[in-house]
Each structure stands twice: as structure tokens, then as C-alpha cells.
Length: 379
Picture (tube, rainbow, N blue to C red):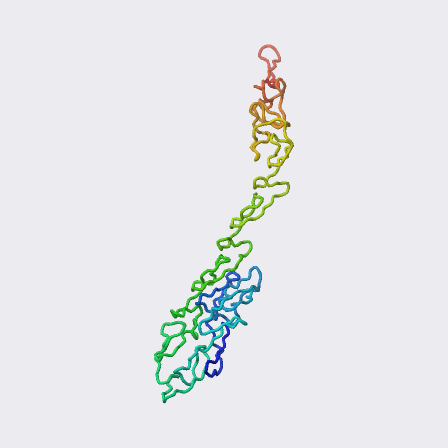
């Protein structure tokens, strides 16, 4: 809980009640993983809900450091347990003031607390004050002049202040705060438990902590996540085979390169095929090469105009690169057998123009004698 001290307001303060402090939200502090969360004042907050240690045991600084409730327990700018500057706002209750040197709310004895009261009594901060004795012959009963207050003035009210039956202010709960921790709605007199992790994957935005307080989420996310334009933590995509400046999938852009012996072509990494020439003077990756003397149909490469490689079609005997041959089956191959030559085992062995691979038969004598199949010839 944040340390408090009583202050005089026309009364004699006999001594601070060391066991009386605000209600202690820090007891509920948890390490949520969202570092750098700041509570923005909306008039309902209570920075005095804290522990003497200030942060509920937040870990040391670093990427894994998380101190989400620092500003729920401090009321002025300061350095949190992770070594980060936190711009906490003054969200102290009405009967407390913020000490900028410590960032703690200090309880103040309410003005006029002794009005109509008498003798030794605890003030709204839990400190013992000495009020003057009654005037005009009025009797001092239950620390009240000329009136006996009814018991249990707070009733079901959990925090804040009410007037007793004698018209005197009385604090409810833990000196006006929530006895079990939480945020006090002074108007309703009820306590609210804030979310332990209100940011939950959000960044660079302010969100409600569930009790009407706005919480400033950290400006960045834990690696490898990044903060996207909508204020959400996002895992960027990998480059894959893309190259150049591409989207990271989180509303930003990133620069991607290619591997060894690759070039960037139309936004994709491409490996040149090593052909020495091309009909359009560019290889399959758009890099300039020597121009082939003959044209030919596209071979399916990215540039849509290189000469036919091994296995490509050569319709009408045209289209193969100069170092390849078009076969009788109209396929580009490294070699073929000219028409009228042999031996061949199928038409695919023959060059373009041949129509068959004729197999010869030689007889060893007249009549039913053994026959020998001769090697074929491209016809």
C-alpha cells in the first residue's frame, strides 16, 4: 500500500496509525507481460491503492519485464521497476494529495472534521486527533456534541464517505478506500476489481481496465511481435521467396533479399538457368544475355520468350536453342539421328523430318530358317 501521513487541519494529531493505509491494489498486481502500462486519470482512479513495495514484486528490467500496475499505485511520473519512464497521472481520492517526490498519495484530515465532534477521535485518515470539548453546555456523547449517532452509518456502502445521523462525515471501508482492494466508485460507494491484464495484446493505445480507468498500453510489443496501426500486437510474416520491399502482414513494410546466386525478378527470388543466349536477349530471370540468332516459341520461363530447352516442344522443327536438336517427335533434345541414318530403336531417336524407325530382318537361308533383326534406320 502507498504510505500515507496525517496532516493537521486545526486539530492536534496524536500520532499516525501505521497500520492504516489505502486499500492495496498492489496485492492484486500480477506480471501480465504487458510492460509500460500507464493509468490515465479519468477522475475515478485511486493511486493510493498500492503496497509499500510499490509494484507487487515486478521483476527486473529487460525484454521479459512487466510492471502493468505501476500507475495504479503511483500518482506522479517516475521510473518503474523495469527502468522505464512512466507518466502516471494524479488519480488520488478527494481527501488525499499526491506527493510528487515519492509518487504516493498522502491522506489529509478533512477540513471541518472536528465540527460538532469532541474529545479524542480517529479522523478520515485513521489518525487520532483531539477535538475541542463541546460549547454551550452540550454533552459529549460518542465523540459528538449534543447528539448520539446511530450505529453502522455506512450500511452496505463499501468505500467513500457518508453522513451519520448527526450530520457528520464518516469514512467507509478502509478509511474511505476499498478494504479488500480494488477501485472505489465514490459516488456509488462500491468497489471494483480491475483487470489484471487490461492491455492483453494491445499496444500504443489506452483501454479501460474494467473499472472506468483508462490504462495506457506500452508503445511496443515483445519480440518478435510488432505494433500494427490498429494498436494490436502482430506477428510479422517471413520473406519466403519474396524480395524487395514487401508487406510484413502487420500494416508495415520490410526489406527482403535473395540467397546466393539468385536475383530479384518481379518481386520473387529467381535462379538464372545459365543459358548463354535467348531470342529476346534476356534469361529466365530477366537478366540480359546474348541474343540467339533464331526465334522460337516461349519455353514457359518467366520472361515468356526464351528458346526451347531440353524436353520443350519444337513444333514444325522450330524453337530449340541452337545447341539442341528437334526430334521427329517434335521435342528438343541434345542430339538426334539424321534421316537415312541409324541405328535407331524408336522414332524419338530420329531428327525432325523422319517418319519412322524401320527395323530390318535378315534371313540365313532358304525355307524356314532363323531370322536376325537388323538395327533400325531413320526413314
